[in-house]
Image (cartoon, rainbow, N blue to C red; front, side, top):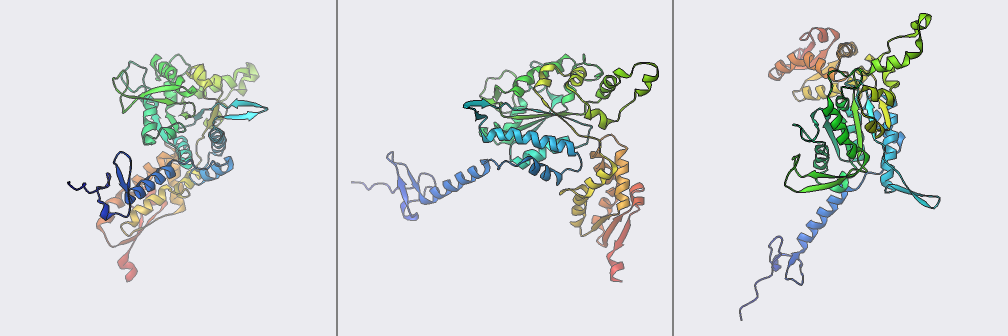
Length: 412
């Protein structure tokens, strides 16, 4: 009789004499001890990545945000509380037994208002990273009503799925950041000239089912509209939505409301223009509706938080204090060429002052520094004699006039 073929592992194809153990099943399939170990390690790694990070208390969240974000104390506190309450729901699986009955706890989405460059996106991104949950930034200016050219609202879920690497359990508790949310205001709202027309209102209507929590069919891949292909059914009940925007023009609405009781005569002296910080502190749901958001969507964003314009002192702190501060980044780049980049305090103050004159908030800091350092990025990689570049206030105003220390001068 012919000999039985030598048994091998059906995964790595190693024969019996090359492995310690070869385990067989009733259907004739075999697996060796090496492959069993490899599978065990793979499963352990997957579980390690998917295990939720222990929930931090609001004060702990705020303390961690302080390491990354300068200022914005009110918004950090409000977001820390909101996020803690939301993910506390995950700990109790959405309901709590109270007085003998099960109480369902609904989520509370967030509307974050504030001028450009005040840290809205950074706050949301830092929280998502801290909690180890999927995070996706959706640009609302690209969203359109179904049937129009552009992205359907379901694409925001596609982005979250991609960030979660198709792990649908993690998707269920992710965070979606709706950037430029104010651009969805309908033109019928007061003082929203230049914003979206009825299509913007259509997008708001389409977003309602996502915000409130429902089963949403999402085409696989970045396909939208009517497609003949596989879909994934995503439950948005536990996905936290943070809508954010600058809401430029809303100050007129707020001024008019706050000055309504000023009357005439001597009372008219009470009428005044308010700065942006005071404006964002006084925003109400009625102001948002007059601006052009539909009442239904305002109702699904019950938590209002605001970021405020940054002071010159705060901009200086942003330059040097956070873990990945802008000045630290540029110093690290120059260190790769063996150069010690230094900034005088007066230089930092001048950079902050120039940035404050622009309308992009903290983002302007990088623009100013890039301009200041441009001559040195061009010249120094080819000049091995430079050891130190010291940026003074004069060098900020007149790029190219920094104090330079050369290695030959040190040796001499």
